[in-house]
Length: 287
Picture 1 (cartoon, one colour):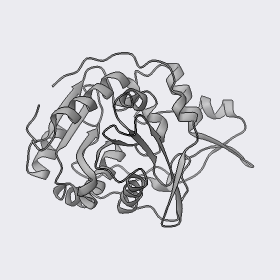
Picture 2 (cartoon, rainbow, N blue to C red):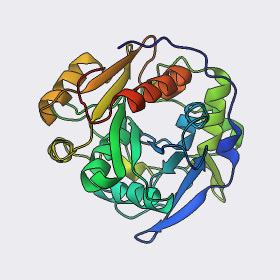
Picture 3 (cartoon, helix red, strand yellow):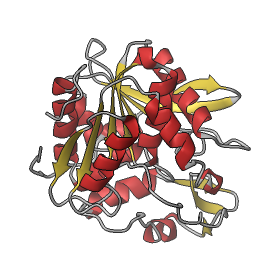
Picture 4 (cartoon, rainbow, N blue to C red):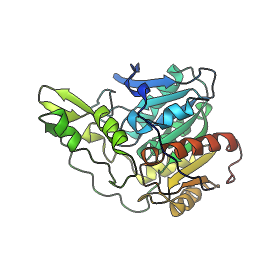
């Protein structure tokens, strides 16, 4: 299925609201809940080196009908940092957030690395996972690229930090206002200067074997939505995923969007998630 894109609107105030906290194995994990408490829940998981702001416009769009829970994994956003990061531990954090948010079965949707964490969430807590949606998230074939250097960079001012904000991959359709809001939410002032909130030690904590094992243990229906200009995901990735899990994977293509689909096409991303929530329930055939 192909969905048209649309503009994402203005920056959402929900990101500035106080976050809730749950303690998971000694680390404070932040999350936000927006939308009607009676709505079917959706858990949104950001990608690597990212934070809740990647869902800036998607979360409030979904919150018109759903209770939306947006988690920030350890080492990201305003959540605490750890000495060691593992996908299994990130999954336990996400499960703890779902339990703290009421313990109802939810649609688990993850962008990029967040989708990989979603495999571990769905495998660990099938009773809390109604469906798993991967947002431009794929299982790589072959060796992953080497991780970037794990070092923290400091900036003399907020303005210098904002000027150095770059997406990875860089291609995007997001407007300047959206990028500025996302960048600002990702910076923290410290005595040494301004720095990005994410812990660079979080990079490359997955193995292909571990991801594939978790994916095979997922019982919930799986959907993949991706930008048709994505540098990472696409039809070939969907076919590979279907081969790994041994069943069809529903897929939605978003025209014009690159890898950062929630920023490039937030309205289309929200519609795609709504579409899969409505149609992907116990029947894994492509809608």
